[in-house]
Length: 455
Image (cartoon, rainbow, N blue to C red):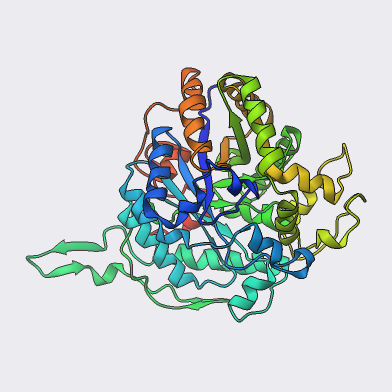
């Protein structure tokens, strides 16, 4: 295998993120999320481990599906309290030199001009180290918080598609590359002939004017996406450069990787245009036995099966508390995250999951891959996933904050570097160059953003 394994850290600006309940672990530092040095420490740790990026998940609503209540959500701090990740990036970028930052932001209730300006600002001041995880908002509470009504699943993606078109025009088409002259003698800072109105008048958005941020190193931030429904895969095939997937087994991930690459080809892009990252929980130690004992202790003493079931209920829009806990779960069409429900219904032909089993399974590993073992074992498994599932890297969760990332960096990364699977030194200056190589700071020729560039 000659491909480099790319590494993303996975966080959210909250307490309970993936492994609900592990905030009770005495070594978990997640309560420090309120402090800026907590975030800069994380960024420095990941950069020390030569991670490509820190991916920060986000939501703007409260989990309220389980039992039709927020009680479990509040007791277990499931995605609440939560702070805006975009406001953290400048400090973390200032504490590092190379690490990229993929920020989650929704196209459902945001406005294209405003969000485009925020991402352009960050891309400008970080030297091109910003990415956008493009999501659509599926929860009732998010809609209510924006004085809106819930948008049906497929329409969310139609809105998102037009949103991206507006953003591309602002980032790529409004200003020509040499619009900024900065000529003191002639008193011309911007050449007026090289700044253009975009005149977008669409189904969902009217944005006629010029953009107000000068060209940035990447222009369009590096784009990520995580949808696995039919509409989500089509959206990713057209727009995404990195894709996050969440499945517990390698064969399930392999099938999704093939589906994504097939869709990219249909969309007129190369199969390798999409870089795929499975959600991964890594529990490591000096030996396999030490790592397994650590996992067992986390699972037995600190995890909250009910809390994880409450989070799952919100993702799939099905109240697990209303079902028989020992009856197999069936797939139902709804406006939730269809891929999450499919994981435990359609996607696994080997078994039929009950709500009780799902709650227990999610307790440490969430819906992603679980890797438990010594650095040698973890590296062996990573190699296998890259070779057999075709993934490009791993989206590694901060399961026990202050423990998971430092242990991975100190124990596993040196073994991966010894095998030549993780770089020893960063190459390229921008986030996109991490994905596509030095010299590829701008979107690739096959990407839809590229067509808005001026010749």
